[in-house]
Amino acid sequence: MHHKTNNSSEPKKTPAVAVDTLIFSVIDNKLKILLIRILGGAYKNKWAIPGGLVATNESLEKAASRILSQKAGVDGIYLEQLATFGDPKRDSRGHSVSVAYFALVNDKLFYPKTTEYYADIVWKNADALPPMAFDHKKIIEYGKERLMSKLAYSNIAYALLPKEFTLTELQAVYEAVLGKTLDKRNFRKKVQEIELVKETTHTRQLGANRPAKLFIFTQRHPRIIDIL
Amino acid sequence: MHHKTNNSSEPKKTPAVAVDTLIFSVIDNKLKILLIRILGGAYKNKWAIPGGLVATNESLEKAASRILSQKAGVDGIYLEQLATFGDPKRDSRGHSVSVAYFALVNDKLFYPKTTEYYADIVWKNADALPPMAFDHKKIIEYGKERLMSKLAYSNIAYALLPKEFTLTELQAVYEAVLGKTLDKRNFRKKVQEIELVKETTHTRQLGANRPAKLFIFTQRHPRIIDIL
DNA sequence: CAGGATTGTGTAATTTATACACTAAGTAGG
DNA sequence: CCTACTTAGTGTATAAATTACACAATCCTG
Image (tube, rainbow over the protein chains, first blue to last red):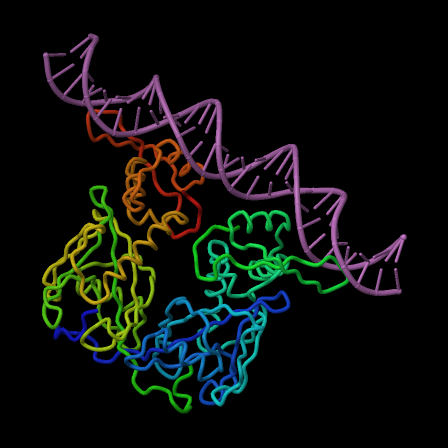
């Protein structure tokens, strides 16, 4: 970036900068995405992921956090940059470049609220999305792929689960994201062998059956490993 | 992105949008990066990677291609988006968001030229870079990691090599990028087993020794595979 | 105390990855 | 012409990782 270097032919006007946030959760063993319905303007009542413009002198991460907090009532989640989308026609109202972020949350620890900014805010199944405004379908498809591959070589699944969980729940998260079933014994062997998780002394019993041991992640910070 | 929806508290002014392009090549068995020296302004004579502002109604890829063509005399190379950098302090002259692209080229097929835009344009060793302007050091570090991991699970090495090449040359590219030596027999076994390359009927002889068979990539388009 | 439901566990077979050293083909120089 | 030099080219044995697969343990309920 060497604009303002007084060289000829630098554009004077550049596109607007926005951020959009793609929030995943696994609920009832299904991969879900948090969608909002737009209140007014050209895209009134269309579905989209939460987003908004970046202010000058505001970092992209800060803008994403601010927008989630202001518009979706969501605070303190870990955001990771996904990619940037800049097709001039992506927004019919004028050229904007959107930096997409993605986040993983556990829906039990997370309370999105409908605000004055949106007509609605709801979890939708990732494999049965309504028609989306802007290029948000593209952003979501790209994000789903990223999530699938990151699950396979990192420990980010921790962000989708509560502190303590059963191995059955962990496996269900993997299966929901990857869209395929996994072998129970091999899965359990692996996650313990690589020290992705470790067992606690606690157990949980839900039905009329053997209680399950509860596990925790050995690290709850992003980390590169090899899982599947 | 739902600005201009007449909601309160949308910023009126957003940062400028720039693109920067990180161009890699392997020359003399060393990983190199194409750097420019800035002509004038606050960063006069500092080293940087080529870049410039994006015009409204211009896509990010088009902006990157245009800038490379105008400023570095380089046309028709494959660009892939790397990441976007938006720290308000990354450019002391004002807040700009830079979408970084990265490209791989074979230096024999590629002719960067010093233009009126830059004081200089040269290949520098990736592991011995001069002090860089802006946050370009960060962009380069990030790009090097991306390159290393992509080499291991995709066929992008094709972009670093000419159409026909020897397996010794291919291995040298892998070794330069990964910064470690590889076993000759295992490497050759692998690249043929997974059909990354196939042999031609041609050979090449450089010194007073046995001529080498020439190989080509089975596909010269980006493709996901597992190599190392 | 029998039946139902979910948790939890081990081993053998296959595939993949690694370590490792010599022969083949050509040129150059005596 | 034949020896020495240089780079190309090849196979096998071992170790490690992945896959496939079935039944016993624990708890509650009726």
